[in-house]
Every structure is written in C-alpha cells, then in structure tokens.
Image (cartoon, rainbow, N blue to C red; front, side, top):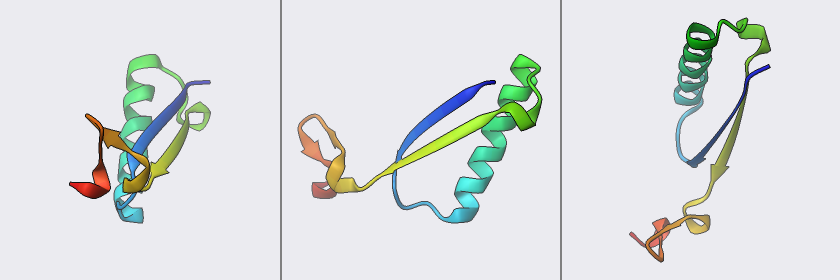
Length: 61
C-alpha cells in the first residue's frame, strides 16, 4: 500500500487538489504497479502564517 504525504500551503481550489491527487496516484501506479485503489494520498494544507522560508513567514512576503 503506497502512502504519499503532500504538505502544501493552503489556497488551491478543490479542482486543483483533485487533479493533483489523480496525477500523483497515476504516477505511483505507473512506477510501482500498485493498483490505484491501494494508493493513499494525504494532503496537509498549511496557512501562510504557519510556514516560513529563511526565517520569513510566507504571509509576510
């Protein structure tokens, strides 16, 4: 059972998230041979106030 965790900043539409999950699942199926129904994808969306790069919050950019 492949398990994929994706951390990203919140703000994408439901359609974008659905497309991403489909593409990731397809890539896992293609490269591992696992059946799609066994591929699990977990999305962790973070607010810009909860993510920083180089000591700067993304909300302050």
